[in-house]
Length: 199
View 1 (tube, rainbow, N blue to C red):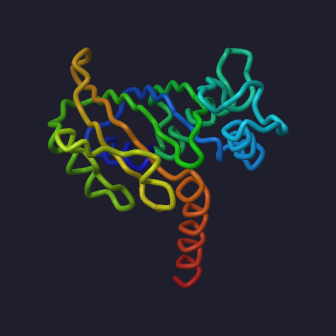
View 2: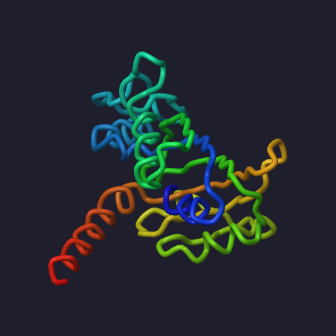
View 3: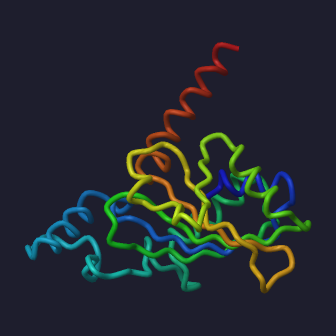
């Protein structure tokens, strides 16, 4: 999500972000994958979640905090502000675990400080390294975890104006959480550190 937001923030400034994430069970770990597979095969296994995950959605990521949010939701808020290097951005989040093996999805609503042209937003996103624009509703072309799994890119689509706010838009973002969220980021950071050492 943050890669897509960076392009918007640099050009228009971000006032507020409302994000709902639909996170795969692999984000919880092997025990959660085993739970999903066992439930699909009508087998008993150790439970990673307090409820079944197959054929279900759990609005519960991490531990609940005193304010009603979860640790995963708070982490999402903190990381967004940190990576965009702007503590003034208002960010609110809801994390949901879904019965998908790999790939996190996010419905993101962004309110900008300046007016924007939607075509310019799409162009900025498409030109961001590591981001693939998949935004052709007329051909049912949009990001899905089914196709993002095993890939290193972040996929963005369903970009449209929020007709209830003057400077706001909605978009759908999908990435393989194990590759982009963990492995790829670790490799990219290591490459940057390596390049710094040679300078």
